Image (cartoon, rainbow, N blue to C red; front, side):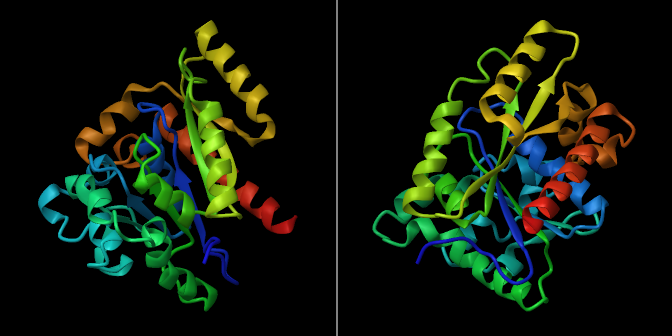
Length: 275
C-alpha cells in the first residue's frame, strides 16, 4: 500500500528535511510548531533525529522520554502513548533519543520498514477523517541524511518543507534533495509534494545572503516563502533554555518571522485546498 495520510479532515503531515546539516531544520520544527499552535492549530512534532534536539528545545528532559519515536517505529508504542504535551498549549511532541541509531539494523529484515511511521500515523489520520483528531498538523523533524528515518518521514508525509541556509554552500545538495523527493514520489509515495522552501539564517546586511536568497528563488520559484528567518542570537539561545523562541523572546525578529511563516503556510494550505 502506498500513498499519504489524507482524510475528509485535512490532517497535514509535513516532513522538515534537508540532507545538509546546520540549516535550521530543528529550529524550524520547534518554532513553526509553536507559531502554528499560537494561532490556534493543534500540532504534533515528531522528533526523528537521534540527537533529540527538537525534544530538548521543546523542554522534554532526557529522563522524561519513556516512549520515543523509536518506540513508535519499533511497534512498542502508539503515537498517543509516546506523545508528550509541551509548555505550549496545543503543541505536543513525540521525543527522540539515541535509540534511533540502531533502528535501521533492527528493521533490516522487515519488508515493511519504509512504512512504519505512515502506519503508526494511520490511526491519527482515521481520527482526523472522523473529525475526532487531536491534531491539525504533524511536523516531522528529520535527521540530516537520506536514511531509513528520513525515508519513513517522506513516505508518511503529504508534503516537504525545506529549510535552506543563506550561506555559501546552501545550494550544495539542493538538486540531490529534489532528486530524492522525486524518487520517493515515484516509488513509495506518489502524493508527496514540496510544500515550500524557507530561507533561514538570513543576514540582510550581506551581499552573500541576498545572492543566495535570489539563487534559491530562481531554483524553486514560487515554492519559496516570502517570509525569511533572520540570523538572530535570541533564536540560537532559546533551545538551551528548553523553550521555543516565542516563549523565550516573543518580540525578537526571529519570533516574529516564524509567526509570519506560520501565517503564510496556513494561507498556502487554504489555496491548495481551494485549487
